[in-house]
Image 1 (cartoon, rainbow, N blue to C red):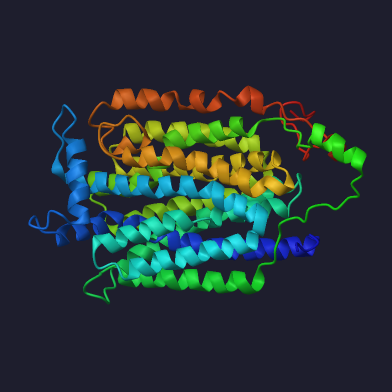
Image 2 (image 1 turned 60 degrees about the vertical axis):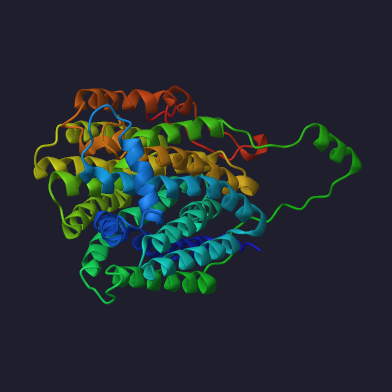
Length: 461
């Protein structure tokens, strides 16, 4: 049974979500700067004679894909392509699992769904600790992809405990967890990767610390998180109004369909998502960055994004937040397309940090306004799934000659004018629903709406 959401309860639950999500995302970001070296380690373990191993069969398939290009592709990009394939797999599994996890949370409660998700995360990270071969590491990624529901459930809980006036600020707090995690997680993971405690798995120390964070988070949620799923309202149902309800089933009034918002999310992820996964590979290829240097770059981005979440994003209308993020993302892509120096890399990283702090947070807030109390988990799960669907293509596009975001590795060397022109079109592709998104109106509970304010028609604009 959900507690009465008083201001005190809201602050307490929000604090629990903030701490737990921060622990979860720090654990999740541990692996980001380690991926190139980690995959290189597993590849070096394989011998040509062991042609039937999982990794050799994957590399054989990826090499066949690589050889399908008309231009010769250097073998040094094998690690990049393998990383893209693993990212695609993780996103594909997330796209399948997110709507299911969301609907289960609508039926059985947020707390129950979140604790089961944490159980899957524990198994996933435990497999990474024990991953002395690629097959075990692959199993870790599969289990993690199917069970990672923390972010969407935290978003649903934040929606449950906030009203329309505080929704944007509440979503910004959830978004700030991402930013803080990127500030500390990659740098901490890179530092722990230098501590070798198990010869058969040089990354076991980082994995074990990640597991300790997940276990701490699970215990904390079990004892401190109450159920927030709103109870279904009870009312006296007569035969007459039951018949009327069957003829005219009630549904929430929507100013924008979820399809429109999902397509907007889809269009954004089309260009942006591969960057997050491919950035370590880009710095590894262009500037020979070590895990520590990559962790420092990601930490800088996280710090800028967290600062913006705390000071700017939470004070603006979600639609304005999305618009700012789209513009900064386009600027970042132009800078990356002409990248020559580390100074330029950090300038682009600053723009990407602004994008990280704005777009997804704003879209989540807009989507939450369009969901009734008994469907928030499912709708927000679908919203996340749409983004994951295109992540699986973008991660695979971290390979050279693909004209998408994650082809930034070779954008300045091969076909960059074509890639650059696609990035210039980005504001158009994402901005096409802008006219529709501007049609926000204030309506009241009596009309079946959830309550929203208008940025296009407000007297202050």
